[in-house]
Image 1 (cartoon, rainbow, N blue to C red):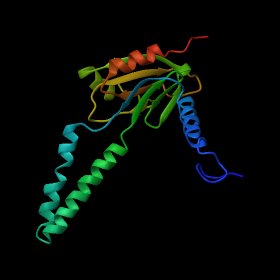
Image 2 (spheres, rainbow, N blue to C red):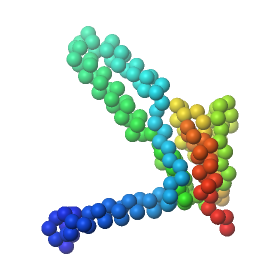
Image 3 (cartoon, rainbow, N blue to C red):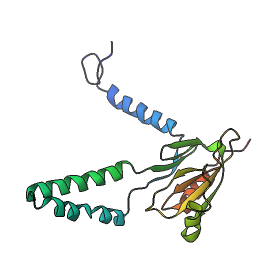
Length: 181
């Protein structure tokens, strides 16, 4: 007989144990200890740019109804903020896995990692970008890291990942490098 935690027939102490087991499973699924984690949330400049919605909506709807105008401005600005945060990719390096946005790759298939800033980062995201590369890039994050893929069955030559902390990401990738066989 199965019942909810705290329900009759199930001891109350089972709920915290179930949460610990769940946390342990998540940690194991992520590949072990986390060496690096970053969420690519929008910068202040993006929030200000999205703020242009407010005067635009005011110009359109103010002649119709001031209350409708204010309500629409708040709802659209809030919706834009929520969607930007909710869709911000996470970059994570654990003992066994590199995860960038929707992509996940076992660390044993990764080669050299290189950080780029400034003009070189722009060239890596533009003219030097291989169309086959796996990309997790955001326009509001300039620095990038490239990570070679050493899987002969994979047509992706490398991953290119936007990050505000490229040197830390490269150091985490090198520190968590699995032993070569």
